[in-house]
Length: 195
Image (spheres, rainbow, N blue to C red):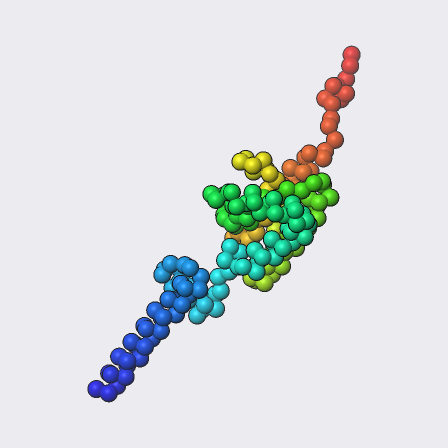
């Protein structure tokens, strides 16, 4: 009888501890009950789940470096514009084409500033990928936002082997396009024999 009571008490304590831990995770991260239980499960099994969107250190480092490159006046303009875009923020996290991405809308004065921004932001993304234990290979692409006509830099990365294969295919495809664009143009009329 004492053994049954001890087992029952241990079971109640274990279940209670689980719910207390999930509650603390929910308070800390703002996630839902199912997400909290998955995070606890992954933590107990040694599978940590990391996300750029939940990392205040990553966001802070990105914003600080943008401030340093743009200067205070242009940075304040960037912040004012970013506060007006509620639906699509200037710093976006998501998934596209089977790959997670980070997209940052910014503006720059010249190609030199663009290159500096790209190098600094690439280094930050790679640093955090290394911290999270993900491959540090990334695909960087510049495009333009349709709503503000601002440049948009996108970093695609991989969290798993499957995503890494997709990233390799994407990078190889981009390289093939660049190689084709750099081929010299041939004139078919020059190769034909004239009679």
